[in-house]
Image 1: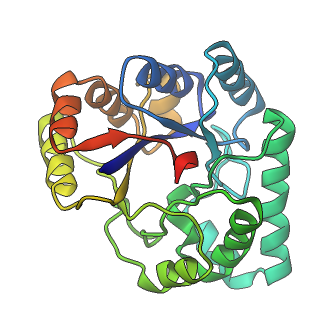
Image 2: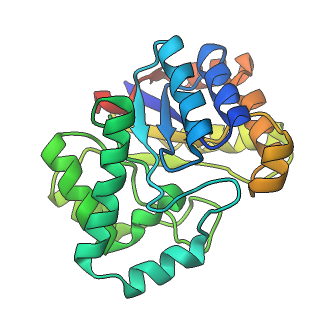
Length: 255
């Protein structure tokens, strides 16, 4: 049996993102939601109400480390600079503070950790997150990206070996196609990825569903791509192709 987790990132970022992700859960294939608790408070509160109203519980922390509002947000270089200059204690402080915000807002520990930009490819950050996930028996997204890329395609063997030795819960595979205009091409790329998965393995697909509105156009590097992802996730033919490949939909919390 092959298990598939479909995660929607960036919940809490804007109201249109929140609405799109909820629709992708109710009408599409999203199994898990990654919440940005350091986004603008009114947008986070809007999202949390939607989670409560729809009784959604498969929720993790989309770690951002710093405030991520529509008018104030870090960029990849900011994280690179932070990891170069911060002490181990400072990194741990920032990570645990964000987790505490999540726990205060949602009343529970996150069911998984999925860092923004896959920034946990940085081994100093990874060390803090690995300890937290092991201590709390929760999974973490595979660290697969380099901070200079929009595509999650680079293998990060050192980080993965480190996590495996600590027995951190992870999927075997992580696939994402963030950029691109054509839904059919992206679906075909995902199907090609999924054909490489063998029986007994687990896989996470990452999407950024939402609606393309003024907030997305003015504040995010992803705008029409969010509407594109929502359309893909609601595509019944795509879902059927996944089922035909022998996948069963699951959750990060089941790892």
